Every structure is written in C-alpha cells, then in structure tokens.
Length: 270
Length: 284
Image 1 (cartoon, each protein chain N blue to C red):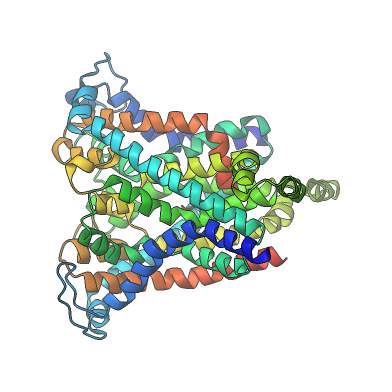
Image 2: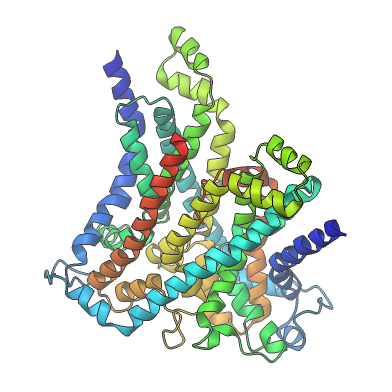
C-alpha cells in the first residue's frame, strides 16, 4: 500500500515534468484552429508543414552550425585547460596550489552580471562581438573553475605508482599526460565535456548579449527571434520547439550516465 | 629538478588561470570602477561621480521591488524545489530498478534551454488565446502585477527540481548501509530512518545546495527576462533584469555596474559561506 503511494507521488512529478513536453509533441503537428479548439487533443492527421516553416523562419540551418561551433569551442577549450590544471592541482605540483584552489572556488561563484558589462564594452572595442567562437571562449572561462575541480578529483584517483613508473622509464610530461593519464581519466573528460556542452548549448545571457547579428545567432536565439513573428502561430512555435528539444533529449538519454554522475558529484551550476 | 617541475606545473595551469583572470576577474574589477562613473558604454568619455549611481538606485522604487522579488525568489527556491527534490530522492532510494527511469524524466526540463522552456510555457500553457489557460478561460499569472513573478518562478522551478532530485539521491546513496540497517534493527520506521540517518548524512550536500540556491536566486535572470521582461508595470523586475535594462536599454553602464555590484555582494556573502563550508568538509 505505502509502496504504491510512493509510486503515485513519483508518477505525479514525472507527469509534471513531462506534460508541457507532451503538449509540444502533439501540437506541433496541428494547425492553429485545431490547437485553439482543444490543445489537449492529439492531431487528427500528421502534417509536417509547421516544421518546414519553423526551420526556415527560425534559420535553424545556420543556428545548428553556430551552436555546434560555439559549443565545440567551449568544450575543447575547457577540456584542455581544466584537465591540465586539474592534473597540477591533484599532485600539488606548484607551491601555490592551495591559493589557486581558493581562487577557483571564488571564481566559480562570480556572477556573469559582475563582469558582463565591461567585458561587452571591451569585446566591442576589439570588434569581436557577433563572433561565435569568441563567445565559446568566454563560456569556457566561466566553466573552467568547476571543470578543474572535477578533473582534479579524477586525477586524485589515479594511483601514484603509475606516474612514478612512467617517469622512471623516461617518459616526458607531455607523453605521460597524452598517452598514460588522459586515457585513465577519460570518464572524467567525458563528464566534463557533456556538462560544459550542455551549458554552452543552452546558454542565454552571454550569447544573446554578444550575438545580436541574425547571421551569427545560435539555435536558441534564432528560435527566440521567430517568436516575434510567429507568436500567434502556435503550431509553428511548437514545431520549432520540438526541433530544438529532440536532439538534446536524444543526446541526454544516450549520455545520461555521465550527466547524472557529473551532477551527483555536486559540481554543476543550477 | 624541483624548480623545473614547478615551472612545468605553472605552464600547465597557465591556460586555465589566464582565461579565468582575463575574462572574469579583470572585467569584474572594471565593474567596481565603472559603478562610480556615468559611463554610457559607448565612447571614451566618462566622469567619476562618486556614489551618485548608488544613491539614485536606492532612491528608485523599482530597485526596492527588484530586491524584494529576489528575496521572494530565494524563499521559493529554498522550499518548493528542495522539498520536491528530497521527497522524490527518498522515494527513489529504495526503488533501484525504477531509479534511472525517473531520474531521466525529472531531468528532461533541466537539460533543455531556458529559451525553449520559457517559450513553450508562454505559447502553449500561459497563452490566453489558445493555450491551456485560454482553454480553461483563465488569465495567465504572467499578465497580472500581483502574480507575474510567480508565473516566471513556476517555470524555473519546473525546470530545476529534477536537478535537486539527482543531487540529493547521489548524496543519500553515500550513506553507510550499516547505519541504515542498525536503525532498522532498532525498530525505526521509514520516517525515523530518514530523519535520523539519511538527513544528517546528507547535511553537507543540503547546506551546499542551499548556499548555491541563494547565490543563483540573487542572480536570477533568464526566466524572468524571457517570460515577463520584468513586467507588467515592472512588477516582476529582479536585480538581474533591472541591471540589464540600464546597460542595454538606457545605456547607463555605470548604473548597470552598480546594480551588478550590489547583486554580487549578496552572492559574495553566500560564496564566503560556501568556501568556508567546503573547506570544513575537506578538513573533516
């Protein structure tokens, strides 16, 4: 009896999470009059017209390319910088390791609003606004502190004997990292990559501030622009939402182990 | 040899530090300077005007609304999603087979972009012409001055609670099984086991998430900006949207910096607590 009650509670919150997404699914195939008459009713026929309209007006081809470039830049920069820094901090290879860790803890909680206005002015004076890769690097800088901490814990779990043996064999630091340590901490690299990728793909405040030119907009910004024209065309808006939701949910389900592990380790920003 | 090792160490840590300092810290210091100027954000001309920006802001009624809204945001997020997260995590603890299934579903809104979540709610749920609210003949919360903030907060909490489920469940699973078994042998019911075994065991996680929630609540921006733009009649303005409007609508970067500084001050208090807590956790 109590066990059943527990499932009712769990199912209730599952419904809370899912119902808005299910509404997107059923209404993306419907015409506007169909939605107006009853948004809960499944579509009577499957028409894909909404999807091509949304794709064209949301500029999704360009959006996907820009989002991939932005996310790819952020993930690559974070992976390189945070894994090298995590390695140094795990082995306390510099005397100032504790000070650097304190710095990173503070940097992790510095709000975007504390640096966005002068950063915008600086980037604008260098004519680097509307540059997707630049925003990728900025997002990387925001994510580096937490990623470094996460990578550090992965390096801490590598037995010291492995490194000692390799160094005794005359392996260089670069060779040690590239051929021995990185393969061992691969799960950490994947977790960091997935979480930073998700953050960068979904980011709003920095991307919308630095990418105002329609040519350089990411997927989500293109969808936001579409809202201005199509806010009364609900079917098209829902089709646009579905186009944005499906790839992310697909990637999430495929990689959920890494996402859940990364979050459970308490290393993620809300 | 030790010196060489130290040099290599600095070389390896340099990219992370240079990026973080150059992009986050240096502009952050500029924000402090800017907040004492009347800079428009364009061109090189500006004057130091002392505390004038802060005086203007404190005299502005909208700032009072924004600050109060941030405090309401803190109270809401410290309770509603935390309770849902704890409840669902506790229920999932003893349902091993269904655990992954429910965690994945709860996290779905969390992994989607705020832009997508906000526009989905605005279009198909809050929309008075054809959305769920319209279908039932209701006015959406985002349209009224009394409820607009809650209209945005509901969507943000909907997107956020699954994250807490996963974090709390992760922490609860670290609880030593022998403690749980000992309590059960002593005849403790599930409430007592939760209250006296699991809750003390996840206390560090609860505190850290609490501090994080306070920080993020003072920085709330996305969902308010996307769902209400701080309206109607600036009723749902939070400090994040208030600062943003100064910078990019009225081009008063000095004032924007001043609000950014005030917001960060609340974050800084919480982040000092955070540093202190995580250090204590490490030493314990």
